[in-house]
Image (cartoon, one colour):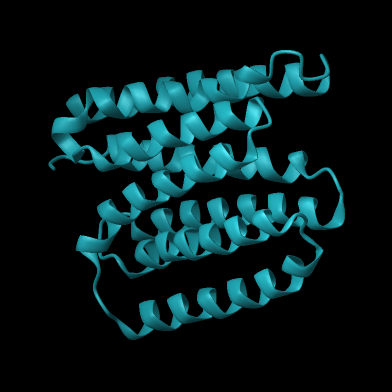
Length: 213
């Protein structure tokens, strides 16, 4: 009964999370983004939930989600530098949670190396088109941090490891789409936000499934 109740609670939590995400999408596309701050509501909700269960899983994931929320808010005010800085800190907290659980297996190392090579080639492809130069420097530093985060997710030995990897790669894809949009001058919100919210939702669910710190 307890297991059923726990799963039911998580389902209700994810329904609420999806409602908050839907509010953002509706106001963004139907109301011309007049309430841009709604972008931070899902991550604020996830931060609050995980912080309430910090005794089960520690502080790193709640802090990662919290700084992601601050990054969302900075993005809603078009403060790109602060947005990148907040997400960089968020990924550092994800790394702090994943890295101690690492285990070097052949499959994990090959997967991590493949990600590093692919990310390096992608950054080299889009970087010349990014202006101004300060943005290029920020993107390089940020790319190193987020790829490290995804690498840590790939290498960690933990229950539901594949789900952590999927969430991390969704995060990488989302930020890669942002960089592509900046480089090519194209709107990529339709790619960025669904994958970003999905990544944060998966991380939140996985955290809530933890039984001990």
